Image 1 (spheres, rainbow, N blue to C red):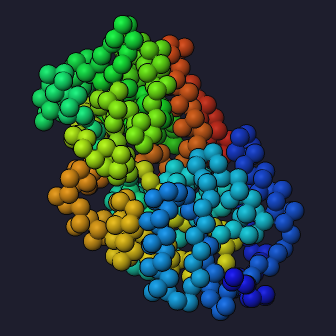
Image 2: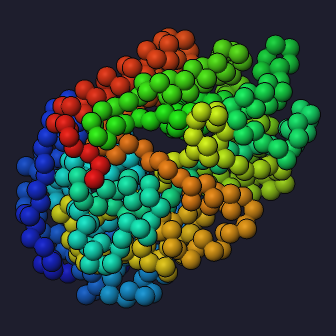
Image 3: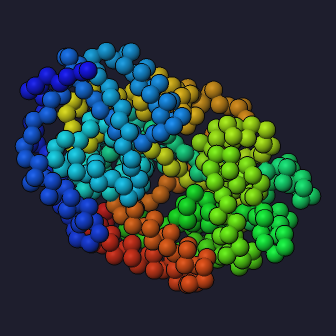
Length: 460
C-alpha cells in the first residue's frame, strides 16, 4: 500500500480564500463552507507518495464508462511516472456536491474535480475553483481550438475555470424504422418540421382497449423536463438568458410557444395515460425505444453504445431535432462534463498537467474518445477522424459542429433548472398556462440571481 511522506507539501495550507456572498438558498451551500472553514483548522496534508506527486481525481463515471476512464488514467501514468494519479468515484450532480464543498472548505480537496458544465459559473462564484486563464495561456490553449459552446460554458467573469472533457451534442433525434414501417411511414424519411413531427406522432401512437401502448413522442421526457424545455425552446427560436442585461428570459415568446406545443401532446394523448405508460419504462433492455413503446425521441451520444449493447439489431436512424419554419434549424446545445482545479488543492502543476493532457492534447483527447465513446471538446482532436463516416456517430459529429448553445452561464443554474422543471410539470398537468408557469420560473430565478448581486455580471 502506498504511504504518504509526512511534511511534503508544495503550497501553504492556510492560503485558501472562500468568498461568502448573498443569502437565500445560495447561503445554505456557502454555509457549509463557512462552518467547515472554522472547524477544519490549518491542516497540513501529505502530497507525495514514494517521491511521486499525488493527484487525486474525483470523477463521476460508473460501469463501462469507469472502465474506459481507468484506461485513460493508465495511459497517463505510463507517460508521467513522476505523478501518482488516483481516480476516485464521487457522485455529483446539480444538487449533490456538498462533499466537495466541505472538502474545499476544510482545505482537503482533491487535486482535480469533474464539474458539470452548468455548475462551473456557480462553483467559480463561490470560490471553489482555481482560475485556469494563465495556465491556458502558458500552455498555448486557445478558445479557437474548442467548439464554441464548450469554451463558453467554462468562461465566467473574464476567466476560464474548467476545461471540457466531453462535448455532448444535445441531441440527436432518433426514430424506430420498424415502427415507421408498421405505421405506413417511410422509414428513411424522418420528420424535419414540427408539423411533420406531429403528423408522424399521430400515426405512430397506438391505443388498445382505451390504454396507450405506444406513443410517437413524449416532448417533456427528453432527459428530464428542464433539458426538454431547453431543447424545444431553442428549436422554436427562443432563448433563456440575456447576457447584456443579465436577465432571465424563461418566458420568452418562443419558449412559451415551445411549451404550448409540448402541452398539446399532454392534452391530445391524455397526460395521465402517458404517465401510466411511462410506469413500464426501464433501462438497458427495457429502454422504451428498444421495447417499441416510444417511436421517436432525443438521444444522448452515450445512447449509441447502449442501443448497440442491448439491441444490436434495432433498426433506427439519427437526424437533427425537428423545428418550426420560424424556429432554429438544426438546433442543438452542448452538455457534458468538464474538469477543474479545486481552490486550495496541492500539487497544482501536476494536477494541471493531467487536465491539460486529458482535455487539450491530441493524445489524451483521442484516447478519451476511443475509451468512452464520448466526443472531446477539443475540435482539433484526431479522435474525430475515427468517427467520420461511422454509423450514427457521424451524424452526432455534424450536430456538434453546428451547435450554437450551452445552458446559461450564470451562478444560479441549478435553481433555474429546478424552476424550469416545475414550470414544465405545472403546464403539462394543467396547473398553470405555459406563459404563467414560465413567468414564475423567471421571477424565482431572477430573484436569486439578484441576491447574488449579479447586476452587470455574467459570462465573459
